[in-house]
Image (cartoon, rainbow over all chains, first blue to last red; front, side, top):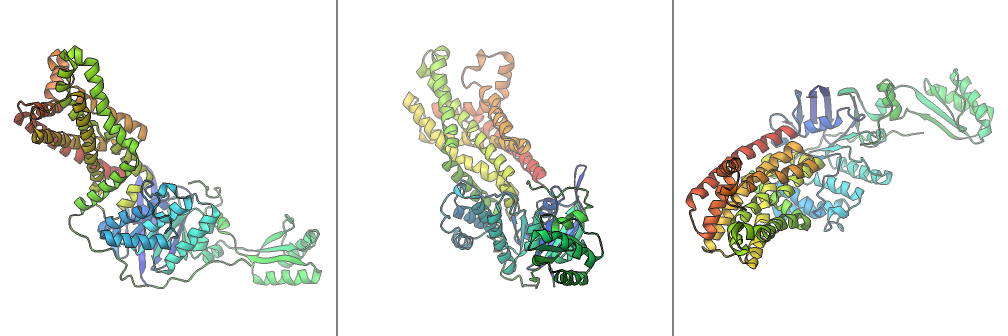
Length: 317
Length: 278
């Protein structure tokens, strides 16, 4: 297997601030790498180095086999970039925007038009293609923005917080689009503050904080790494929550927190304890509507990786 | 039980056929023109921007002629003949400066240039594109100026060819000075600051001349400034081209200064742009 992009020991300083302090990133061809971290972690800086917008002070990065420092122009022919904010030109129509990028990528006017039409169609913008982008909704602008980064059929696509500012329904929509791109063989690097987003899209996740990589794994592996699976029991009759808590305490051999909202939650060592909980509930005659063994959420993972010293990533841009 | 998503699509796929076409020749000129067209389309769809560029010189022309014409030249008609060449130069020096600078600031802020920069587009062409779009504004603004001027009674005393040459000369100076606006836009990157600074920057150049009143009536320091001011040379050349009189000397000086402005401000703007955006 070959890497679609690979960065080793990237360092970038802005005056006294160190935005990147030795970051390694790597993704196989056709995979999605999620770069997860709070505001100011260095996610955008990392993307800007890989997309040749910034020069790293140290370290090296290769995109699609080309060194970004040595031959940035060749790299620019192989990548697509979508920034944090939709950068489509509002005074131009959707089609004009895409044709402009096609022309700048050395397509003939005819080819650029054909390419724009195909992309508008693919992103569900065919009907809106002739309208000015200023009339588009936030979701449409995002899709147009994404389409714009695909005009050059890039091998590697960089998406910097692509769903920032979108409402949940639109987010799902964009996720599907991003998934379909990866299925077509485009390698995607996606930064996000939404743990849910990295979980839903990424094959592997690199967690960065204060310019350093603090974890790299598959979403499942990352959750495992944070340790502790959780058993969740919701009795059919909320009045049975106390009885359920007793059963769980016996089965796991540890203290169990008081049920909250009729749900008993506690951490378990392994699957055998879970089996004991199932048997115990049956023995005690407690009927349940929910009985689950859960991996910790990525929020919990993040908190445990960053020492829990800080609050969860902020939701603003 | 909650499922975890771990799509296994990590198989290597060949990257063949996923390339943009090979680079063609002369990317700077081609991309600059493409981007100039973009800016022009934007301008035409925001007529407010154009109105400002077109109306300002006409306002100056009408205001000066009727306010000061009698006092300075004895009659508005004589004053119009005297003032018009200066207003023509003012038009190309002031037209589009603020609009160009503002659109640059917005493109930098909104991340539009980031996308261009992640594409194989020469960085200079992003600046050049916006300056080139001014050329069309010049044509429009000058056409309106000539229309209003002749309606008020201005008469070209030479011919069509010299009048066109006057326009071209003024446009060359305006083009070279618009790099000063680009430089200010790149350095300031703030709409309010840029619109004020870029609007006022050319004032000493345009008004520190014999445009509106004979230089001999000015205080010594202003006479000294008007004497060395390159815009004075441009106005003299345009006077010669529209009304007759010496042309070669002042025209050569204008071209020389335009070259200097282009070299100094253009280079500084490109260097500053590269430094700012990385």
